[in-house]
Length: 216
Image (cartoon, rainbow, N blue to C red; front, side, top):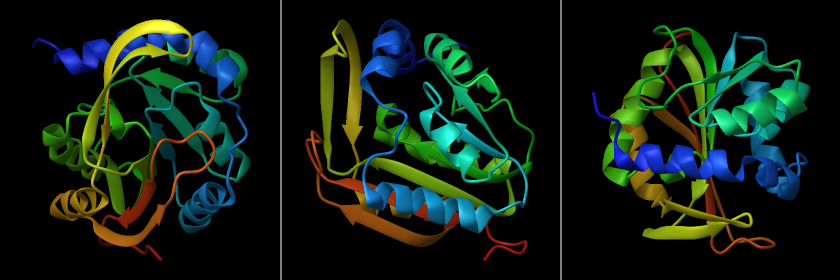
């Protein structure tokens, strides 16, 4: 099957910027609200089982959640980003994969995080992505999404000091929440916040659960 062009472009862009991305984006999670969302997710999942960060990049959020006590690994489209992740976080596992076809069995995860990774997926493809997230989560498993909130597509030609060509989608939080629910999840919490620091617009976070099991 031919790979969609958006996926090829995104991989090529992140392979190109990987080293400088790691240099310019600190491992420290900035902002108390962002840290609070991640801490709440870690507490809710607890020791229920394995967690995967989908679109983990250089592993900064994967490592942060590991430090909060989760049994977590990472999956990313970009081999270049994963090379940096493995070097910077040798105690963690990182695998190449796509969020449209995750290399994971049905119902095996207690938690899944997609932290600013769905922003590269064309909005019309997101229902399929959320269905895939539902497939790999166990009943009672937790989902956490972080994304840029809005309704526009930005074409990037320069990023992290490099010439690139890929899209960033600012997504309607209401639409994402509805798509997550349509995929079979129960949306349990949502946080919308204004831009901070160098951000160019508001941000949103959604927490959901696959019904069943013993989720809190």
